[in-house]
Length: 69
Image 1 (cartoon, rainbow, N blue to C red):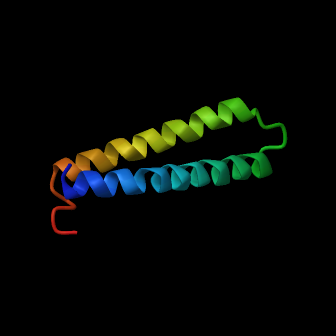
Image 2 (spheres, rainbow, N blue to C red; image 1 turned 120 degrees about the vertical axis):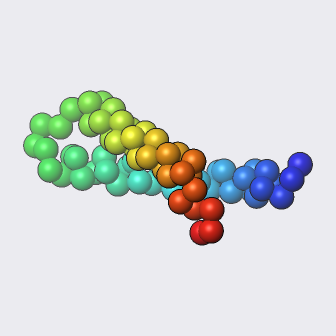
């Protein structure tokens, strides 16, 4: 196992925790801002926004944006 893989194994739980925190924070905002919020629909929309952001990050990585980070 190489160094990056070891770091990944060490960090993946923390990354998931951070992603869940972002999701939950946005769920609260939807709840505060929408009087009769449909939580399931809001959750799906938030996940869609998160997936779109991940896709943009993937494109940036492939374009070399983070090669000298």
